Image 1: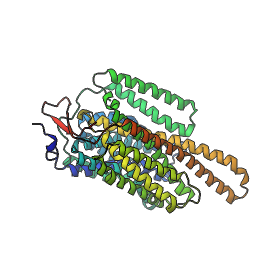
Image 2 (image 1 turned 60 degrees about the vertical axis):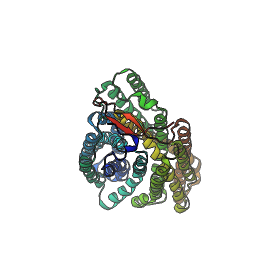
Image 3 (image 1 turned 180 degrees about the vertical axis):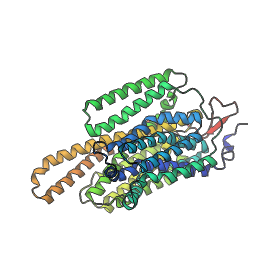
Amino acid sequence: MPKTPDTAVTGADPARWKALVFIALAQLMVVLDATIVNIALPSAQQDLGISDANRQWVITAYALAFGGLLLFGGRIADLWGRKRTFVVGLAGFAAASALGGAATGEGMMLGARALQGVFGALLAPAALSLLAVTFTDAKERAKAFGIYGAIAGGGGAVGLILGGFLTEYLDWRWTFYVNIPFAVVAALGAYFVIREPAGGRNRSPLDIPGVFLSTLGLVALVYGFTRAETEGWGDTGTIGLFVGSAVLLIAFVGTEAFVKHPLLPLRVLTDRNRGGIYLSLGLAVIAMFGLFLFLTYYLQVVKGYSPVMTGFAFLPMIAGMIVGSTQIGTRLMTRVPARLLMAPGFLTAGAGMLLLTQLEVDTSYAGLILPAQLLLGLGMGTAFMPAMSLATLGVDPKDAGVASAMVNTSQQVGGAIGTALLNTIAASATTAYLTDHAAGATTPAAQKLVQLQGMVEGYTAAIWWAVGILVVSAGIAFVLINAGKPGTGTVAGAGADAGADDEVKIPVIAH
């Protein structure tokens, strides 16, 4: 007999909060890996003899595999079962991390990073969709996604701290080996604790043309932005990648509109709220990725911080994200419409970013950088939590994996765009500054000061763009997301194996 909304909590999995621990642990591992390797890259490059021209591939190999295969990974989770995909993803990620830590040369390292991306693309959408189908009560869902959102937002900064410690006091190889205990604990916990609700699988045949078109299109898009950063926007290869990506992705959308069992059902994208989430979240991540990059360089190169000190310097942002996500977002999510959390959240983050446009060579950390980070963290934490929840809220259970994959795809593509676009803006501003001021620097000390001032000029120019992007993100969230306070409704588990009584209780949005 189907459960009513009133009995949803009492009929829920009694081990759901334990399951959250292992899902959150896996998410932390994936997010950590996005930044922890950046800190270790200079040491790894020297040890393994990786050329300057190829060092970017340590980052790019992971990004291409992860970003390109996310939709496929989400569909596999719907087909195989989210728990099985989650455990396989963890096991594979641990093995790839062990390979990276034991790397003896450039090829082995790049192969390990690509494998990490492949298994990350299985793991990330499975984790988010497990969370979506495990927590079905609106208030419990708010708490669970608050914790998940805090980890998704703050994990990158934690990676900087951990990466600094491991590189400075142990060895760069430990930035890979540290993933293994995370993965083993999360996999064992998932195997014994997580219980996936029945009736939510999508056993329809795999859309092979959709897999090829989406994977190639996303790889071309991510690589296009990565190449633009090093070769320039006018480079023939860069333009070719963008044109190829557009053709492939347009063909993908056309294919999905006509095939019987699409990889990405267009209903997932055309829902006004989910479309607004994917777009606003992707734009916000553009701003955040640029900030992590510039602030890391500013603190280490301009201020002379060590890797460990740099990591600790990001703690206010982590604290702000935790408070924004687990306190503000969680407490208000069931009381106010999502857009009234997301839009003000992005604007608050924009205010923090606006403070950072005032950076100078001798800027005080406590006087400007710390309050800016607190505002950024509070704003992003408050906005990320309802975004993560709303992106999978009300979706048919058989589409939960691919809807979750779209959240990760928007973040991954946003990160690639942010790194390339804002880096290019910063480099252009720095070059222009040095051209105008280099002639007046006649002593070594003056020349060094001009170099540092040029770097800061580049950072602030790019941060101004990040402010504008966050304002646009807030506008999109306010205009497109028209969901009211989350109510609780029933969505049929429409998987091929779902019977008439196999209804899954998922909160839906009350308009």
